[in-house]
Length: 394
Image 1 (cartoon, helix red, strand yellow):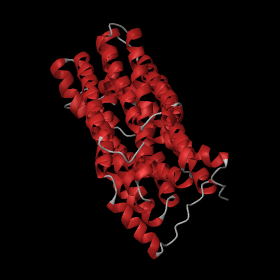
Image 2: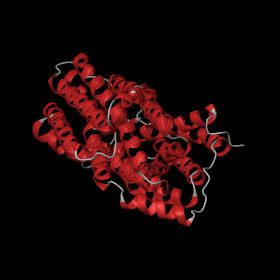
Image 3: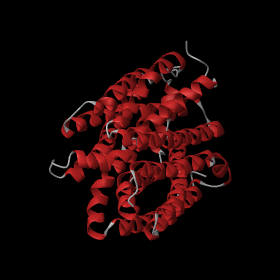
Image 4: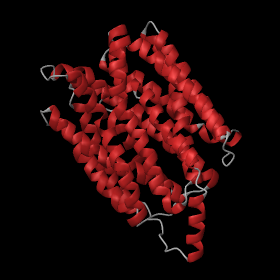
């Protein structure tokens, strides 16, 4: 039987479901160097192995707008339950598939399932809560996603030491969450609109601040292109820099996600005192400084502070983007608006290796991290200019 929206069981279920999004790609990151050796006889193995990590992100980007339309049209829970089943089965398929092509097919299905899970989970949070409660819960959601990354990345690193296939086993956890979703989460009421409500919705649509939406989507895309250089490229950077093992790479990436969790936990307190624009500036500055430290590091121990600082900045970004959009989106368009954000967020993850790999081959990973830091500082300046002209949001 469904629980009241303020029930701890409802909140815990939403938070654990949200962790599946970050788990989708990053869990197998520590396996990449070992996987590359396994498929060494495959042409362009470097690219294919990196795409195994990020292929889900492309299909999240493709599927999210459709997921947003579906949940706005027919409701939330049915799609969430179906995508949890697909997630568990497709995600764990790397345990037994022997072709990198078939593994990529499984990763594609995983991505489509994440599109439904991520869009539905965030929309349910916006449906259930308002005001300060919504801001706090969105911060908790981002924090749990980051903490889930710590657990899954660390576990993935140690499992990769046993066999590169073992981290795929972790995806089956989605099947354990299915009963909770079906029995605990309430379906939000969907009442037909009166003429007065329809008129109000039309007025909201006319005044919809498209510049802020486009800016938020751009931030989501570029921030993920930059930040996903950590799980995609860091294992190779650390291997070249210090001959780091898979478990060391996993722990380093987990450190970044740990500090992302800290940033997300503190988000509600920070946002209560600052504007959306100010939070963006702090986040961008943190990521830029962190990447600068990574660029100039000469050992494993010096990379870690850079990861921590950059992770903190990312932890502020995700809830800030979500709260910004849920503050301006009409209820009837909420799923589609957040679906667009999910698309840009995960498309940035997919594009990260396609953009960073040629750059790193041209100038080296050290310089690539430095250039990424500069890009984030430029993004901070663009955000300041655009949001300074928008007076609607505080």
